[in-house]
Amino acid sequence: MKRSFVKLLGMILSAYSGIGGQAVMEGVMMRNKDNYAVAVRRADGEIVVKKDEYKGVIGNKTLYKIPIIRGILSFIDSLVLGMSTLNFSSDIYIQGEETAQASEESEDKAPEGDKDAKTGSAGESALSVIVTIVALILALGLFMVLPYFASLLFKPLVGTGVGLSLIEGVIRLLIFIAYVKVISLMEDIRRVFMYHGAEHKCINCIESGLPLNVENVRKSSREHRRCGTSFLLYVMVISIIFFAFIQTDIRWMKVVLRVLLIPVIAGVSYEFIRLAGRSDNALVKIFSKPGMWLQKLTTREPDDTMIEVGMRSVEEVFDWQGFLKEQAEE
Image 1: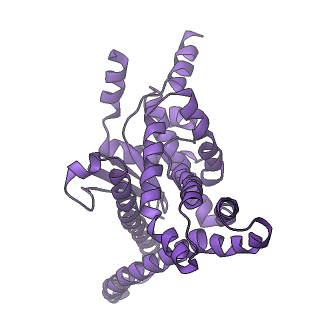
Image 2: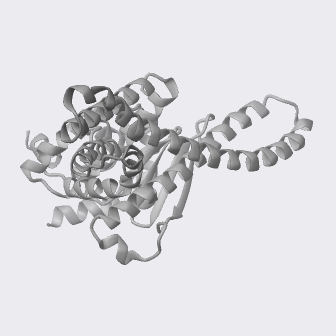
Image 3: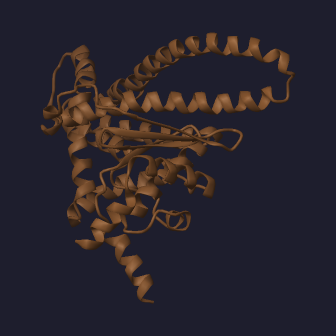
């Protein structure tokens, strides 16, 4: 009875660990300050780990202490590191499939296959850059430009100004939620969302004061206040406020502003996520609820093999045993 109460208390009074992560293809990336690790389970069942340093797009750490500016830089860092680790996980998983397939073929074809792999690798790197650029352009068009033009349909009813901006914001939110819902129907994305759940559950486990093992991780929550899903939701909400007060009658200027203000909106959103992750204030928890609800779409319950991958990633960059010891002494 006492033991159960202690565990319940630990889940309520969670401590800030400072680690964060991201789900990748068949794996999890965890980052702690300048260190990050990506753990990926190959098609043959082996867990491959890459551990490295990422100091950010700008080496000047002073800028990362300035509110709003640090949010803009962190947003850029997340895009750069996220795409890099996602490409790594894809390569590892594909290599695992090719290895399994090659083991069924004759050995005399292996050298030719290796040559093709090297040639293909360079082509895939160039292709990944192109895909990234196209994806960013499509994202800007879908979530920033399209809602504006869609809102013009309501102009005869509400006129211009704040009312039209609010309608634009609602359309933007609906498009975002619909987008998440649609991609969650894809099998590969569902597995990514399961690894997303494993990432959150691993972090919640240690921040709740529990030893990092499969049993404890399994019963931990798959929602977390510092999640990127919540961040994106706050970007949508805060953009409503920005565009409601920043007005111009020039249509092309409105479109340009919606693109140019994205870094600033991201910086403001980051400050709220940062506050939410460090504060147990009741008001902050209330404002965090919508983001937590949305995470029910972007996370799924992982199986034990996925939890093992998440744990491996945590252990590569974070001394969770030392963290729990410090929390127990406080």
